[in-house]
Amino acid sequence: MIIVIGAGRMGRVIAQDLSRNYEVLVADSDQASLSKVKGIRTFKGSFMDIPGLAKADLVVTALPSGAARDVVEFALGKGRDVVDISFTDYDPFEMDKTARTHGCMYLPHAGFAPGLSNILAGKLYFGHGSRNIEIIVAGLQEEPMPPMGYIPTFNASSVIDEYTRPARFIENGILREVQPLETVEPVEVEGFGRLDSFYSDGLSTILQTFSEGTVAEKTLRYPGHMEKMKFLNEMGYFSSERIGTSSAREISDELFRRTVREVPDVSILKVVPLDHRGPEYTVVDHYDHKNSISSMGRMTGYSAAAMATAVLQSKIQGKGTYPAECIGKDDTAFSFILDYLKEHHIEIKVRE
Image (cartoon, rainbow, N blue to C red; front, side):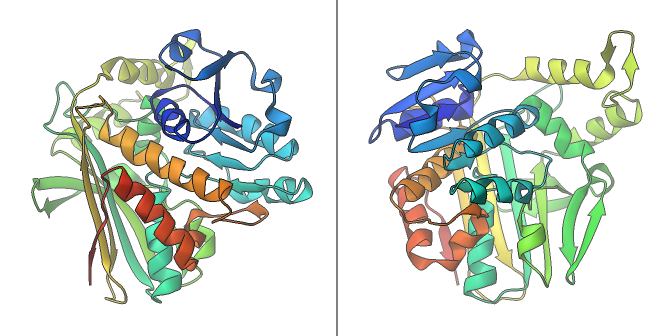
């Protein structure tokens, strides 16, 4: 049995996809989220009380970043392999000892970006010897949406984190960091025209597994959105300082969350070897109107389901923290992931 912890938009896609071939239980503390899960057994309550967790074949966590750590550590402590899509701010290698002690694997940041982006970058780095890699990623509406020119396509609080968390990258083998809102630059993107790019903190474990070269991730938004985010940040709307019973950041999280609604979206990913050692990988994915699944849900959910299935089928093996980019070292595992996504009409274009 597979246990998916988190019944939000991403968790539901993962659970639904895995349930085609496996028995799945979806757990969450929120009944409203669980009520949207169809045709799959559910459990409402604390993760510590999930029935059968200690005997599960795999645990998949799809939680907001602030809620993931305790859940992951608990599952690893029970000796369960864990595939985790949460965009956490702790070092995933902190879980390495726990996973090894209990004889299991922890595959962190196993979504779209980080996740699939790491797999493709790992193929370039380990398979082709590229040492100068740029990752370009976007989750956008098909058209800019008022009032911000953008609606969060994943957890709203995590979107604000993208703008406030220092963006780390590797420059000539040295770890660097910048403030995302200070790095906004216009770029031309084929099929989309002028967009704004900024450094984002999505390299995840690459910061430790790539020991040389220059590797950075940049995220795209429609023009004008980043100017609004910079204004809000300068005015203190993203500050954690408490004013009365709440902080400005808590209020902003809630206001951002209220803007979320289901509108057609598009996901973009380019992983480019700037030193031309290896191919350029590109995927542009759109909203699934037939099944009413967002593109971000498809890219995150199906990437996670692909990695989870690879673990279940022993295409990915190991103990301790297993970074997604290491999948790029193994031709069999790498091809399995790409074939799995292709079955879901997510085709990664390869340009030599």
